[in-house]
Amino acid sequence: RTPMASSAVPSPLQEERLKYAPKLPDALKGKGRKSALKTIKPKGGLDPAIRKLFPQTQGQEEVRFQAGKGALRTEPMKVGVVLSGGQAPGGHNVVCGLHDALRDLNPKNKLIGFLGGPQGLIDNRSLEITSALAESYRNTGGFDMIGSGRTKLETPEQFEACARTLKALGVSALVVVGGDDSNTNAAVLAEYFAASGMGLQVLGCPKTIDGDLKTEAIEASFGFDTATKTYSELIGNVERDCLSAKKYWHFIKLMGRSASHIALECALQTRPNVALISEEVAARKQTLGGIADEIAAVVASRAAEGRNYGVVLVPEGLVEFIPEIKALIGEVNELVAKEAAVFNSLQGSAARVDFVQARLSALSKMAFQGLPREIQAQLLDERDPHGNVQVSRIESEKLLMGLVGERIEALRKAGRTKAKFSPIGHFFGYEGRCAFPSNFDADYCHALGYNAGFLAAAGLTGVMSAISGLTRPAKEWECGGVPITRMMNVERRHGADKPVIRKALVELEGRPFKAFAKAREGWAKADAYRFPGAIQYWGPASVCDAVTETLRLERGRK
Ligand code: FBP
Image (cartoon, rainbow, N blue to C red; front, side, top):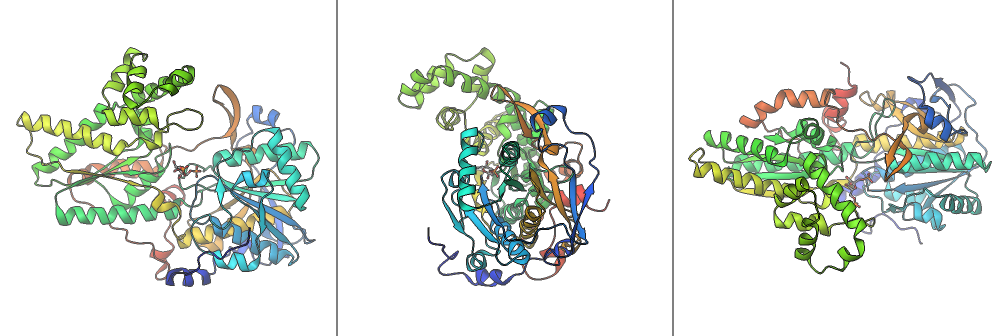
């Protein structure tokens, strides 16, 4: 493939952003000549099951770069990079940061980008990331420089194919930029290469807008900052429209897969009337009907004050956390897998709905029948390649709009409300995944990539690029690596025990949720809306370099 510039006709903003120089933490300055490695005593022990599964790479310590000498090799090397999974703002800066570190260590170093995600690595499709190419993508959103993909690297055959590609190209270290699954697979690949004595290094980098890849050492995954700021801008605009038009209830579903970090952050930024947090729904064992009752109560109480408008935030993964729907989805998945041939031969939604309905347990049948026809059909039609329900495709915002509408109608008939309920549904997801990275993500991603270059030059493997102290100015960020095995445990997945990085869900005891829970009653009644506005790239640091509320509450000075 011929390397292409990021856009034939750059917008004025893109022109200016190409010139932005991400802030490099002091710990990474000196072009590698002044870097020493310090090891950090890990907090807590390693899971014994993980110790057994990773005999070669377990037991490593966390490391930090500090002023000193001799940690990095300066002989020429070739490094490979692959982007894995969904887009997240700042991905290009990870590649640019890696490029810059390699260039600073030794101008003869080379960076190879694998095309279309892990499959490009298997099939040996790549291009060299030259300085010219890096310059044309600096500080831009998207992953289009080299593309991404969702192929999972997990079988020995795939590992062998990767090794063949890396050896053929003379690449000695691979940087995998991905979420929890991709970094898990990076750790398994690192172990495989170490066990077979190939001398190939594998490093990870924490990416995902979902914010669910975080641990004590990894304070945030990149992309979360920009995506939540983009959605918060839009939500704030919708809130202002509410205040102006005073006639609609907006139900806004927010991307984020299972965890509700995005919905929680956007709620903290914009103070909507209702924000559902899936983890709380599961903890309270709420039913779908119960959730609709609670929203209807807010609609009615606001109507009593003359406010027939409002905003409700709905996390993407909500339905999976509602116990009766979770059980229903589990049964549907099993049923469709068992009866695949017959199910797939049925023509049209109605036939599928009847087929499934007749075979569900009594409780799941009740839950299924309580859903509108449209949602029943989505549950059966939107399936992934393994045949499982694609929960994110279920239009849960519309489901809630319908259920709340029914309740308001019943209250009106009983003379208990005069509410006018005019709902509008939205889904904000793809709108935020490829935005121009905020200054925070531009700096953070560049530092993550640059740091990964240093980790490669330090000869490490099975380690994730880790930048901490993120609520402080970028200059003061601490830079180093965390052994991926330290983030792993063994979980039951698809009927088998698998080593995985724990998915970080919203903690109900955590500061962000507590801050939200304390304030939300006031937000339901009053018009407490907050308007974050568009991401700003130039201006006061209080605006341009502000971190997310989640990060500030979790890691800021207490
Ligand atoms: P990952 O970062 O985990 O790959 O997912 C990001 C994400 O945007 C999720 O929030 C969303 O559920 C999913 O990707 C959508 O996937 P797709 O791009 O395949 O539609």
